[in-house]
Image (cartoon, rainbow, N blue to C red; front, side, top):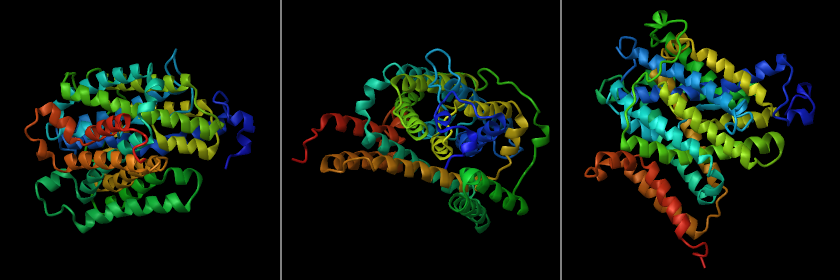
Length: 452
């Protein structure tokens, strides 16, 4: 339901229209609230997988604060690439960029248990993958035929399924507690805090409207945080010592080229590019009632890649368009790109203030686990929704069955590939890449009349 006080129906469908500032600023903040929790979560997960940053006494704790800070800063900068644009870069549409979940199945094996030193290899992959992603903008329209909903839906579903395990581990007390066999792992207290987040998120999502409903995950995290604080689980540690202003540091984690990282990020760039195509189409259909133009799709892909490459140079993770904000545009009916630009400026300001990142690090892992269970479940559900457009004949069922079985199976039993070279092992045991490759190849070579 749109608000007529924001402008005429024709104005609301125009990306170049700007509502009055008193209306535009709250709408911009609404976009930030819708994506905030999802945007900073990948940085926390990658740091946790690498084994640094948790607990204020960790010597690498400042690196976690820095990663969270960069997640906000470069989400804002990448969003400006989309909304303001420069040359062919940017769709000039209200597209909100944020740190991508899609790359986590590749990033986690690359850094698992290797500490902060592993981040140089990761950043090398982010930068080179971002450059590759940028150049996909020149051909994105020509390769869409090879990536129908059967393929893209399967991949998004696999992303969600591969990450659900992380949510359960976090809700039960975190990976370090699990590995060490600590008695508090899986305790009633840990699960109670995580369940508060889940229950409050669901209640807010389904029993409220407008801004509250859009911010359901964020409000759920705040509720869980309040309960955890009451239980003495919150450690403010070094928040007071975090600086009030800090510029990004070039090559903060270093830069190292690894074949496994580069191949993995480049292959995932295809998936991320197709997700962005879907988001652009969703924005133009939901906000303006039209199809996206080739120029808009190419511009959005250029912005995706450029935003990712620049982020990697400063120690941030890959960026992509955020689907939850696409739904927000459909809900508000406000197509103005300038509204999203205002939200981007808020993200940039927050990204320059380390104290914001330091406060986020005080969130107990169990609280984050409750939010992650919801977020990753929604990723899997989005994949299922994409698959609803598939014609489920015997041909497509066979492609889906083989791809899912092999991809999910390799992910569940990584030891099955123990004799592969290390680079190939990282790529294959993610499960995501083999599933995508099998689905794409089978979809191209199997005849459409297989059922006849």
